[in-house]
Length: 379
Ligand SMILES: Cc1cc2nc3c(=O)[nH]c(=O)nc-3n(C[C@H](O)[C@H](O)[C@H](O)COP(=O)(O)OP(=O)(O)OC[C@H]3O[C@@H](n4cnc5c(N)ncnc54)[C@H](O)[C@@H]3O)c2cc1C
Image (cartoon, rainbow, N blue to C red; front, side, top):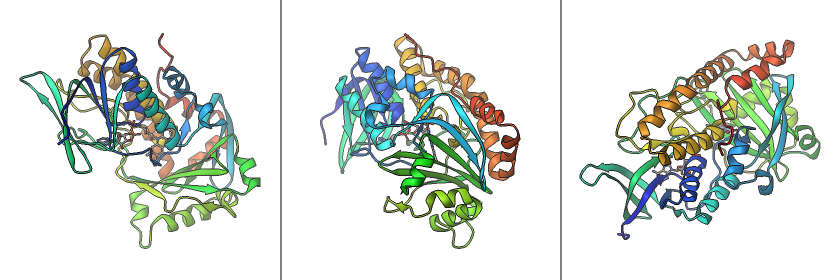
């Protein structure tokens, strides 16, 4: 048994949300303990698109994506069989591997004094009424520890924690996601540089962008029904996508997959937003624990960073978790609703993408309808 730890703030989960929150609280002078179950930064199922909204939020935390080797993304292409439309973003975005980003954020947290424990998994989180404190039971390779905090922040992403499962499962929750890196031919690297391509096919969609080292990230979501067909799996999904998109087939021609196997994720609660009853006595839920936007919007990390920043502001201002949850629900409901609706439409009817060929500004409209409402840095 590891000796008990105590802190003012206890953060469970060291993805973008947990690290960002821990940094903000530690910079405000609080003692913070953060537990992250992975011993080292991992590849994650993610398109790795850092939206323009996420950049000021990262800069505020002392993180500069271009210093971490991020690639600039200036435009998006909407693709079915061939490119339908191309639109320039109002402000530049970036692509950066999650391994690099999550590691940089955790290191920054350590630098500003957060007590970071990697390889520690929280097994449960309880509120102790007698002492008015939170207590987490964590395990590290079979060793057990107890951590106490005056407040608790749940930043476990899509993973639930015993006793604190989400009340609802999101409004578009029948998708399964896959991610694979491909080393592209030098000609295709040149063609793709600066763009994030959104490839629509019946039953799903995929994002493709360069992430450095000559590699592109192909991150696809597909309905569970499609995957339940006989012989379905990553190989048949890839084959299916290539048959439906000559453009993608050209991009991947002569490429080499660089991960041993694709990463997969199921039961994604797209459209989820703190929309159950607001619990009075609850840990502060941030990042994907607060709201899950469909991945084509490329704004999940901005939401994680934004909710972390806002939770820190409200916590330091003396507000309760329920106040924060109520605010987030009000603020995000519209963009989550639009995002889910669009996600359901494009997976069911990819031909709808044709509208963007005739009217490319539709693409920008879609982009703005699913944005984080307000990420202007607060001084
Ligand atoms: C297919 C797909 C593509 C996406 N593409 C993009 C994109 O291109 N751009 C974008 O901005 N967003 C994208 N997103 C969304 C983005 O990945 C998430 O919104 C973001 O990672 C949320 O950050 P988080 O910190 O809340 O959760 P996470 O990043 O999931 O971090 C949670 C952390 O908690 C840890 N953890 C979990 N349980 C425990 C426990 N019990 N104890 C200790 N630690 C624990 C995990 O190991 C993890 O490190 C995508 C999502 C999907 C599914």
